[in-house]
Image (cartoon, rainbow, N blue to C red; front, side, top):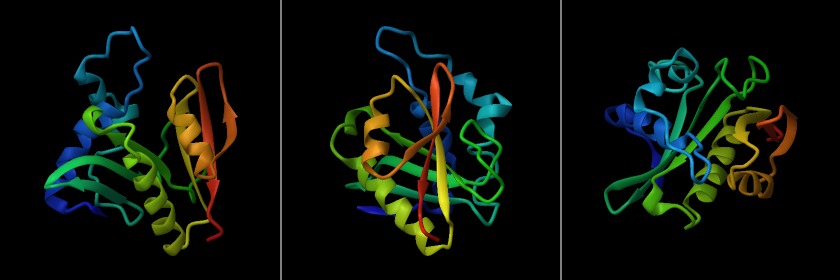
Length: 156
């Protein structure tokens, strides 16, 4: 079941942020303290305190299996001050079951209904999620040697 996150669950976003860090096969994951860096804290710090903060979670029999959230922030996927940046994380044991696709699809609808014209995200080029984002209507906006900034037009 996909639903809006509850305020008492906002604290879970830091764990989901850590799980969202793409680690290529064979590489060692970074220490969890990486999420304390300013460039990552912008994703979760004071979440729920800004009007553009939105989060949906996938509830699997009472356990939150994944989360998609966005806010207007100066992050890796920042395009402009009118476009929210999206973050997605699904717990490892729930991946490749369509949960991420369902979460993003629901978030795109929520953002469209809320009047946003588009949404952006940053994704490592080597991340298999690039194909999922493309299938959901995201296109490559810009990039560098390691990652893409992708945009989805919402018609808002």
